Image 1 (tube, one colour):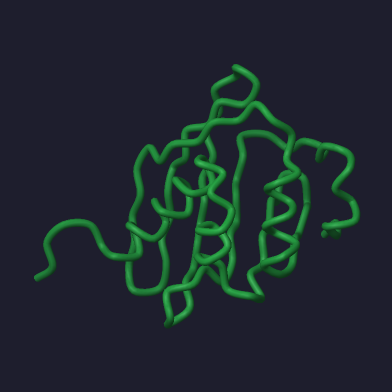
Image 2: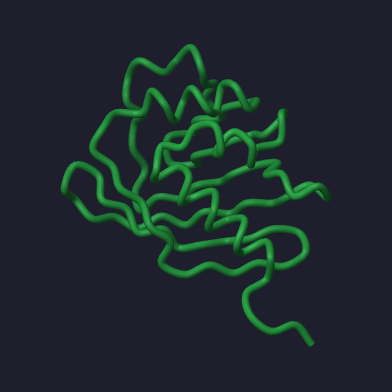
Length: 128
């Protein structure tokens, strides 16, 4: 029997923590080269490490992230992420599967309400 959090939970926490720290080099190291990011509420899909890294680097300022609770198993992890965006608290759910080598293969962020994406990132996304 394993005690303590599953190693995938630690990887998900590292994902959120490096994103919060804007540690772009370490953040990129966690991502599979063919990672796919999905945000169902805006219908945005970002494909590939370089595009997803740029998408985050170019995201409008004013956000803070912390993991509220996280769970993981051999295939991936999920977390409630506490977010403050421009002073407004929000909650997101994030689901992250991993490749055998521990790299993140996809990220799905679920936010509280459907919304339109911020402008200026159209060149990095497609709409589903």
